[in-house]
Image (tube, rainbow, N blue to C red; front, top):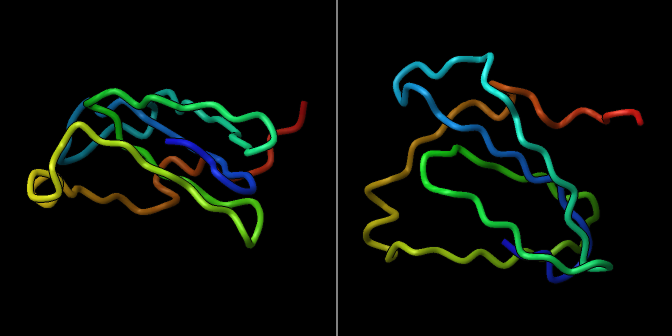
Length: 90
């Protein structure tokens, strides 16, 4: 994944059980920005999602699967199941 314009939060969680994943799994959280371009690799076995941080954000996704293969691998969880979207103070 690459942020081409703007910024986004990206979260990924290793899934221990695809039917009922543990809510205690470690959430890997990244803030990506076109100001400091970087490609984020999310390995197989991780659920992932993103939230844009600006209205004009554009993302580019890369995949090792074809569109047809991706259609067979579309598992969705509630966006707040692990709730990685809050602001984390430093």
